[in-house]
Amino acid sequence: MSAITFDTHRFIRTLQKANFSNEQAEAISNAFRDAQHEADVATKSDVDTLHLKIKTEMQEMELRLLTRIGGIVAFGLTITIAIIKYL
Image (cartoon, rainbow, N blue to C red; front, top):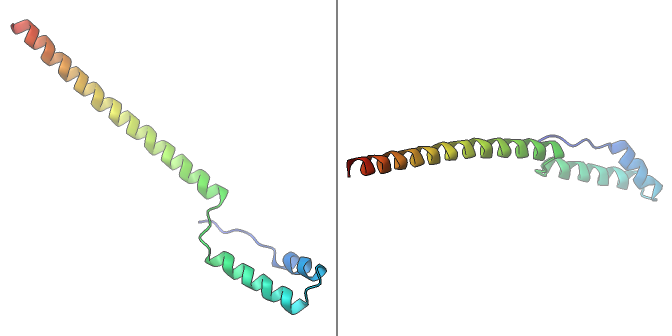
């Protein structure tokens, strides 16, 4: 997973403007940063990459399926023609 950027200085300033003490603001900022590092969060880039991978795999599977179905149809047609010819 990709890292998410976090401006701790700006976060601390925002908390201080909301009347948090410097110590409180730093503690909250550190706790938030630690929680972010521990969280296994997917970014938009991660989701886009996974979407592309799934789409590619589905297209490959569709091609394999169509190839097999085509082979089965050809085999069935060959057997049908052979039966009609020899009857």
